[in-house]
Length: 336
Image 1 (cartoon, rainbow, N blue to C red):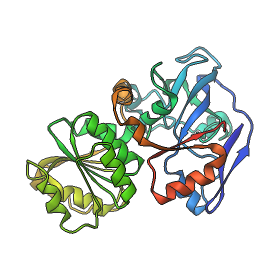
Image 2: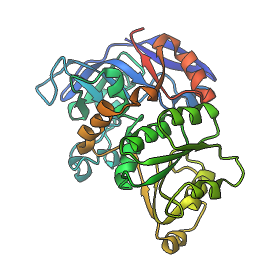
Image 3: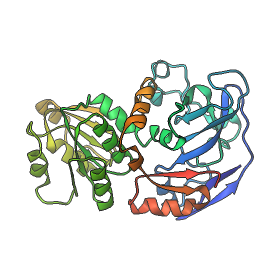
């Protein structure tokens, strides 16, 4: 099979490797769509090798034993290799599993674990069926495109009466705009890159600002009816964005960190005096998969979350585009 590889700083190509085979309850999936995420950061530094990607959609082409999927099933390939047995896995919170399977040890090779490739191996219970009326491309958005902020919306109980501030409008943040607008919440968006702000407005954001604008906190608060936003969701991981979110939150507001890099800009006592609630969000509970598929199916702006499509043979060009920040979700076709 073919798969993408990083061969040096800002250098990527496609390499050939042995086709993986199904074994035990791990099914072989022929990848039809490989959404790109943060792999471009490894491309910038020259790190990553030939085991790239953690998002995929495709068709089951081989099983080693009867299980939860059949040959011919179209599936969303969920991230990671959780144990499937602990209490977190059993209640759907598998993303927080503390007993992740070492795929290399189990398979005897890392080959078959990359998703920027033509095939991937996955435990059958981590393969979610795609409804017949949803395309592979749109189904791929149920991974990092919509997944992290869908969870943030669930945790913060975002609803139609709320105003939500979303900081960071990369693909994850733009997915947050889709999720919030699907719930009819009012969205205020913040990002440095004009292209992203414009895309957020196309998706239905009420307002979009650059973080370097003057008097940003009072301007955002002036757009609310409750002396601040009800919910804030940060997808940037920047401490300055965390501070902006907290400064714009009303008392008893809800704040979700989708990325939490850096140090906290405030002490924990802040949450006592303000009454804020803090939530860490990653991937959604698997029990919510039907709900996220409803967003994919019914959102009027879902197509705007996809900005570019590339054949995998043009991965170098796709990485270069991602570095500019002037894109939403970028999809690879491993068979072109």
